[in-house]
Image 1 (tube, helix red, strand yellow):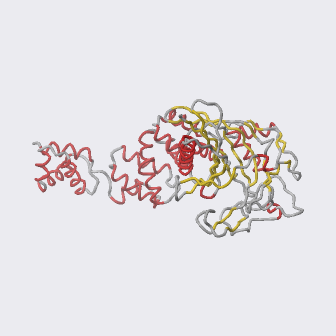
Image 2 (spheres, helix red, strand yellow):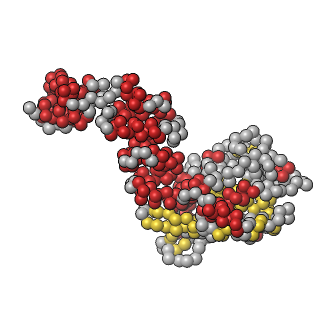
Image 3 (cartoon, helix red, strand yellow):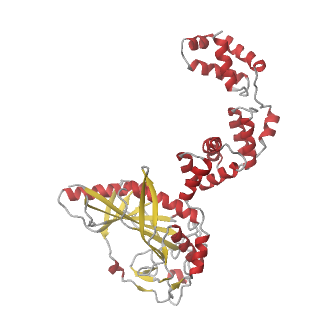
Amino acid sequence: MEYEVVIGLEIHLELQTQSKLFCSCSTSFGKEPNTNCCPVCLGLPGSLPVFNRKAIELAVTAALALSSEVQLSSRFDRKNYHYPDLPKAYQVSQYEKPVALGGCLKLEIDNEPKLVNLERVHLEEEAGKLIHSGVSILGSDYSLVDYNRAGIPLLEIVTKPDLCSGREARLFLEELRMMLLYSGASDCKMEEGSLRCDANISLRPRGSEVLGTKAEVKNMNSFRAVEMALNYEAERQRQILVSGGSIIQQTCHWDEEEKITIPLRSKEGSSDYRYFPEPDLLPLLLEEKEIRKLKAGLPESPAERRLRLREEYGLGKREVSLFTANRSLGDYFEKVGLKYKDYGNLARWIQGDYLYQLRETGKSEDALEPDKFVELLVLLDNGDINRSVAKELLAEMMISGESPSRLVSEKGLKQISGQDQLLPLVEKVIAENPDAVNNYLSGKEKALKFLMGKVMAQSGGRADPGEVNKLLKNKIVE
């Protein structure tokens, strides 16, 4: 029997606020353990929570960006469970009445469109963090608890079971991350825990509409880990089913070192959490005019940018993908493009030499003033410098910020062109390298590149490569 994979994701997103969801404690990352805490986020007797307006606005903004239906009335509940990183022994979350319902995200997989539908979007508070003595909770002798993260505003995004493989899950998460970054709701830093993902995965006979028994997979700390873990778990379940066994509903831990999923415990149901309305918080009531205002302020989405880059600038798939995924680099491309209209050439320079220099220097995407980049490209287009000199100038400009025209003048880098200047160099190189000349005459094209290199060296890299190439060919066959 053939089986098909069914995957639904639960994405936990830390909202980009300066204070926690129900108190004024800082959300800053990397502080000394247990220093960003107060009676409210620790759940001490007599403390009362207060809504963080900014967190609610960011939650609504993210929901609107995902085409979810924002609810005018929502409610917080207590989700009861005992775990060391939960100081209250319950989590303030939303269950029956979330802040938003539905929504979707459009993907393109192998040039085919795919729509992934959302079940709900809801607010909740973050738990603390366990720091294990070993590599993971499995095999550790002890664990320490840091409550700095407890109470940070979280947005949980729950998809419908519309994904069919680990690869689809990874592609969905990559697109979702871009969407959320563009919306400004979160910084989405997985290394800091700002974006995390749990997955529910099951198998069912191909063509069946009935879902199989699911397993929840946790501890996936990168998009690559999500893909690997879900592919492994799908195969694990398939092996059980084809051998006549049955799947147990359970929570599994992804072991990054061994690249396997390890069953931890039976999976809880909603009844196990004993949800009931949070008595210390009134229902959350939103005004339609405020929702309309937030919707009107939504920035351009990744999909909208892709379309615009194709239509306005005529860019190819590779450039569109880069300038969408790296939003700052795309912004820089458009700033330079205001004054330099050869968009194809500009895109090649930015995704090539400019991006290389950014990585080498560690500078931000707008490190070089757009006007100076335009000046450099115009010098090249006008034949005042050649490409190798332009690359050399770009590297120096990234460090000094100097004008390329001034550098050309100071260093004497203006391109050498014209037969009067180049022919003596060509004749000298031909005379000094008879073996290379004979190799070229016998059909070895690489020999011409060798001779070209010699002429360029003689000119200090300033010769016009096109003219040198023509002169060499003409002179050799005379």
